[in-house]
Image 1 (spheres, rainbow, N blue to C red):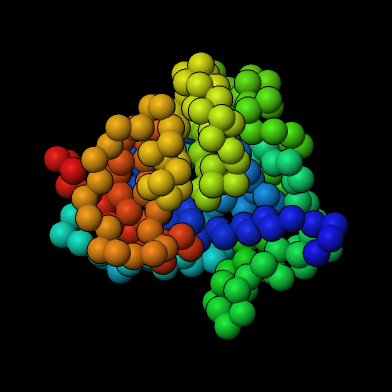
Image 2: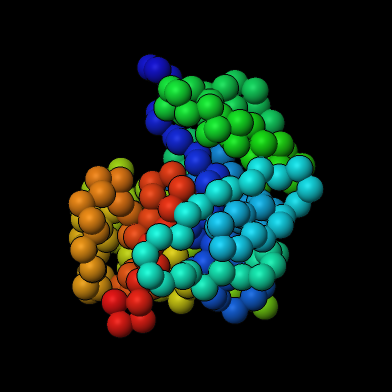
Length: 242
């Protein structure tokens, strides 16, 4: 506890990120900030079960179950997205091939949630077959130089989930400016309060049904697409008019 920091890496968040990623021009190059061990850099490998649709990923990959709630269905793809490049930035990257790092991730799973522990183990197996490249450093300072390696014929996507709540007000705004300067697509999943702190954000949100674990899925730092569970178990897509 004295030597490490909280770095929960919940792969099931890919289930709520997927509809936004699938709507972008393919193929995509993924750059995740606050990547931890990089388990959310494999949205193309996992299998998804939304109840109304199933998207099969790589053999042996975990099945991520996500309920679609509300009257509007998310724009779910019929097949996995096409990821041709993946990088992560973290102050303290974790190595999926380091047993101590993996044990630390398992310690961060809440007690009594056995399915999350099993899902984490299966996601680690997926990542170990093709370990992501993770860069050590600050999400603002390392953004541009890490993105410079992305292939030019792919859509560069900066993504994050439950990250900006851990950085200060000024750094959030500098990050928004840095993403804007890249000209990249920006897919974020953070609390509404955190997103409202960004200079680019101007979305009007529908009522959240008083759910205390409600995140908002956004594109471009401004367009609110959906409410989502912090651990990817449900998504509530918004109508086109909000």
